Length: 493
Image (cartoon, rainbow, N blue to C red; front, side):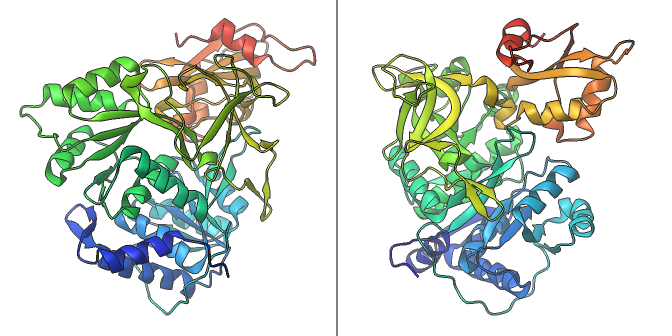
């Protein structure tokens, strides 16, 4: 037992005491005060205890955005369990792998996911529980230690399979406070939850606003017209955006038969083109906060007004230490490119591995992100992509790891070799492109290959572009030279 810890459950319990009658969550027609939300959290914690889950064991969630998802954040914390939020866009095989790797004891789901939950129950022999059907029993709140794990966010599939980034309660609470301090978020703010609650940014912003006693407004999934209505009706002050959200919202504003009053919107957090950001800020009263971050850093490392330095990824936050290092791990001067390195209380505990942690990304006291960039003389980060061996593609804010897509493509009997790269995409900012060598005599079409991949992994990971070539450039050791592939074929067309 430690006297120096403060958990997510502690935060929710505190709010119930200090702001019992203030609105905590609005989900459609349902509205919960902080006191009512605390009761929901305890009810879910009772259900988890009834199922026999113990401290340090994993509890998975497969659901659309709903208030019970936020309650599960608190319920797992209440009994010392580890939350494993699952991306509902993944295939059954991908979900099954994460459930097995995390050793999840129970899967919570909603009615939209009942069919796949039943299949996973049979396949993995685990308990499942529907958010809509709960039983209660007593539970004893858990006292956390300093680095107890709050959640495993599955990411970083650099070797073909995703790994669970282990974030502690201290990581999450520090991230909450940094976000709120940077953006001056307080009790009067209202956040529109339209990013998935399995996403680190969705988790970060919902818990940050909650910690300040602000209001969370739930949206099952993004729809531009519905988002504008909710912003207007609920006086939303904060939302997050990754391509193509901003474009869709502005298009809806332009074509709508009436004018939406979204003057309450003060903050938009995310990534988009400088042109889109400038246009959005001109049309609304919102500031756009540009960022750089990872699941491994509990969210934001940089966060600043995008109009201060258009095209940059912002400046580092108040408790994030950032540097650019060379191949030897030495810090390089301003305006020199290298690998982005991070240290501070937001850096994760390591990747989940057999109940322990793989800390191979942490060297000389720095977490090496695998991203390449430079820091200018004013402290702004300029993002320049991923290291070739750690290539990451981000269509619409989702993470796609080339090695994972390549392993599926190579299962096709007509493909001899492939290299998957990121290319510019007009809708999602970045798209997935597969450059392939076919076996002699094969006549595989791009459409056939795309559908083949989409039938085996999440469809957002399938290539949007395919190019067939006679050969792929190689390094001296015989491996494919991804950097050269990108130089030769790195366009979307």
